[in-house]
Image (cartoon, rainbow, N blue to C red):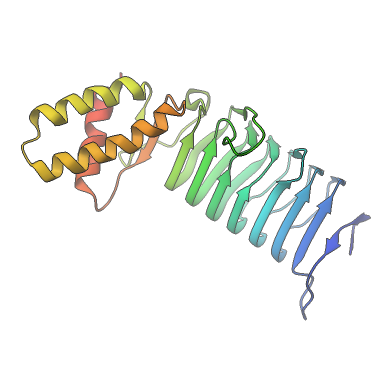
Length: 244
């Protein structure tokens, strides 16, 4: 399939346009993909500059596969809807992700630099360095505006510096700058002063999960308060009270 002079590999046909787009070692500039509905979008070592991905509907998005990063520079992803996006060996620079809807976004080898986000990410992980099973690299997160993003089940892991991002605020979020110290203080209070044995056990279990994240190098934490788990919320209140 030829898209504005760019040859894309196509897999799958129906009565509608092709359901899968694959770009391999392509340089794409100023392309308008807006409104397209595809089963899969894949980029292998390709570059996209000033492209418009607005209002696309993608079931499976792989923004970067292969041995080298794919690049997205000054691209617009406003209103995009993605069911699943995993891996993503890619770099996004000055991109707009306003009013997005993402069910699953896993960024283990991804850079975000000076990007703007709003909308909803239901489940996500953003890694400051790649997991051990991937070639080791440090991921760059710098100058991103996340203030309009609705985090649901979202984690920042392995050294993402949250002090260099603009984060969402409001009472539904708990932000902790020095997570290691705050967790230690919260553990002491729970052990010494929580009389309910079951609640104490649950609270310490929740702290154990957070301690695991911190042990991987994540110094700051941002978490959304639960609508159902009062114990987790009580633990978050303790952590935040010792965060400064």
